[in-house]
Length: 340
Image 1 (cartoon, helix red, strand yellow):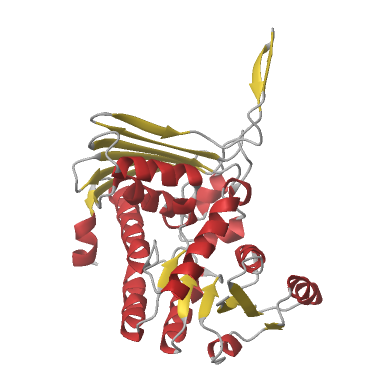
Image 2 (tube, rainbow, N blue to C red; image 1 turned 135 degrees about the vertical axis):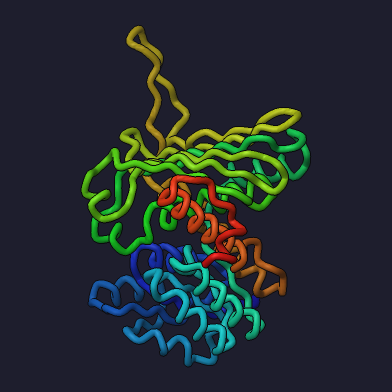
């Protein structure tokens, strides 16, 4: 069986997640993983997965002629330089979202990818969720007619650490970026206008760090549809992930995933499990699927299902949302490339 030889940059939470999935994929051969700080625990973990080499120098991956593809799972500020180096080394690239915190840097990185003729897939794993993928299929098949309204609810169970908020790029770029991509994916259309309202209702420290923790974002699409996204950094009952697409001939909705569908009905009321607690549980299978698609597309010479342009468009929407919040007005996405 033909295999794709892979190097992974970054052995944090998401890097380890991908490493564990990749080492279970029969068409992947993970040769090396790098991290800026290699510990004995990390060496033991890599050895347990059968990864033969771990290094504190990512250039060991870039210079290895046997490595065909690189998974970039490091901090966001390193994504663009790593993409450029990998492209120039002729290696295919899987990069976690966002590619950068500045869409202009993303544009420059994508030019390097194009010039090198390599493949880049972006880590918008929610596209591979069984529920959301089914919604897309039904919309594409015309089952609800012309989409009119897209509603997306995305609420985390608890805010990230303050240290992370300071470097994350803010709620729009860090959290809502998935929802902006999902809006494009489910509607089958580009976002043309964004109007964002935000507040600090969860933790005043988040506001002191220059961010918001609660948002409602209105979208307009090129196909005439309208969209609404609501975000919160804290849903006390768990990870709240729901969508609805309403169209001229009906609607499709997806509710939360729960640990079980069991309900207890008594005189006191009807009780069921809270939603799955966080993204590692909720989107476990989608992470496996996105890596499987990447490997299969590379080995079979097919285009990847979510590419660099998808990352770029989501980043532009996030940029427009931030500008809308600051200026208190709707912002056309076309303004972004022209004025900035």
